[in-house]
Length: 303
Image (cartoon, rainbow, N blue to C red; front, side, top):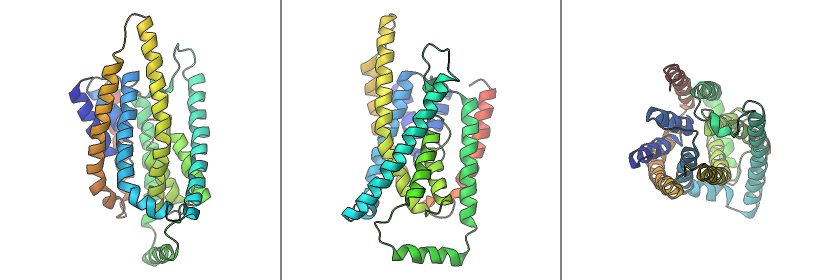
């Protein structure tokens, strides 16, 4: 993994993070095209650190909105915290339950049965992208069907509510559930799935988007810890076998990637967020379906 590889992957991650197109899938495909192994401990740690960089970009960008919506009053914060904990708990139960189930069934018999072994499988990524595309397309087309009167009525209703209002418990539960389903699968866009299900269960896209990224900020540290422990175990195993891993170089490169993904994420967030709010959500569904076909084509070519 060279400096060039890290910069390219950081830019890809930073630009794709806000979009519901699975930034991790884009990073994995870029790794494949550059001849890197996405399932190696070094690369999965880099991917998590790239997510960390864009997570801080998201915090910097959305902080003002979160402060006005979630931290305006003590009551608003309590409602937000309850929904966030509930959704995250569902994510943990569903997501890590799925991961363990896959490791004990699909990967049964491997000496090191870890879900990360599947992250480089383009044949699995293609249908995951297609599923995300269909979900986004359904949510986007449903949004397009709202007539002008209904849209005006929704706007008027939102103006009468307190700015501290968040998604409902039901909407938060569905978003946490879909986030859990997205954890084991590269290509099933976390933001695409959670925002779409929020919209389909009655949340405005703005509220679904705001809560979706708050969920991401809470779940990312757990992923960092998991990949950090995985890298340590791999380092010890490699040292025992006489092929040590350059841990300091890997961590240094990953931190550098986090910095560049943070900067790229800020650049992307500044002009992409407005585009997301202009009734064009369904276009991301079309993009995911096209990307699914491209990824499957790359799989047939041996990537």
